[in-house]
Length: 347
Ligand code: F6P
Image (cartoon, rainbow, N blue to C red; front, side):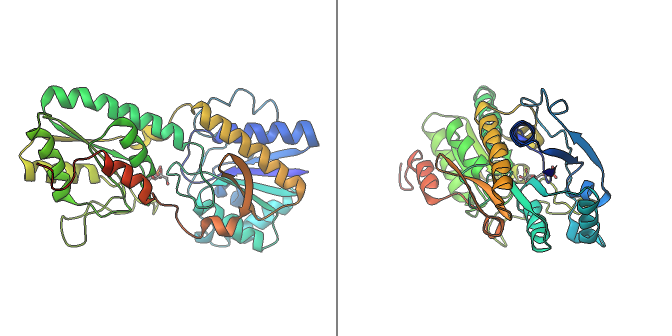
C-alpha cells in the first residue's frame, strides 16, 4: 500500500518514534511505501513531501520534535484547502493517510474521511486532554521536565523565603499541572477545571509561613483563570498567525499573591522546554505501540479510526468520538491534592 503520513499541531517528544515504528512495520511486514508530508496539513495542501524509508527513519527513536516538521495550518481556513488535499492524495496515489495530531489535526482527518479519504489517526497532545484515550505520548516527558523544575524551585525558594509560581502548559486541562504538582510536592496547584481561588491560595501560603515554612511553591496551568470580574485576566490575544499565545497567568498570579500576602513572590514559565528534547522510555514505548497499531488498522481496512490506549491495551475508536470533547482532570486527583493540604479551618 502507499501510505501518507503527517504530524500536525504543536510538536511533542515521541512523534519520531511513531513514524519509525509505522515505517518499520509497514515496509518490513507488508511491503508498504511511505510518503511523508512536511509541516502538517500545509504539506498536503502544497504537496511538499519527503521519502519515509528504513534509511530516513533510522536513528530517530530518541529524537524530540518531528522529522516531518509541524504546523498549525488549518485546511478549513485555507481557500480551496480540501480540494487541494484531495488532489495531492490522488496525485500521490495514496491508499491511506495517517495523521498524528490533536483535535485540530484529527478534525481535518474526519472531514477528509467524510470526503472518501482512508484516514487513520494517532492521538498527540502534550496536554493529554484528548478524550477516548487514557494517554498521549509526550505527556510523560513533559511531566518529567515540569517535576524536575518544581524540585529545583524548592531550594531557591527556600533560600530566599520566597513564593515561587511555576506556570506549565495546559490550555484547557490541567494534567501537566496536577501531575507535576503532586509529584513535585507543590503546595498549591491551579488548573483550568477550577476557577482560581486566590483567597484559598494565599491562606495555604500564609498557613505554611505561620507553621515555620517560609517558602511555598505554586504550580499553575496556563489555562487557569480567575473568576469573571475579579482579577484582570492575563493576555489571551492571538499571535500574527492566529494562534493563542502562551498565557502568562503565572506572572499575574505571582503579583496578586505578593500584593495580598506581602511575601516576596517570583514566577517562572516553563513554556516550550516542556515540549523539547528526548522522550522518556514510557513515551517511546507508547509512541511505538501507536505506530504499529496505526499500520494494523490500515491493513485491517479500519479507516476513520484513532488508535487509543485503554488501560494497558491498545485499541481504536471513531475519530469523531475523540474530538467531541476535552478530557479534563477528574475530582479524584483534585481530592488527592486536597488531602495533602491543611483543612480550611486548620489553625
Ligand atoms: O496544544 C498544546 C500546547 O502545548 C498548549 O498547552 C500550549 O498552549 C500550546 O501548545 C503552545 O503552542 P505553540 O507552540 O503554538 O505556542
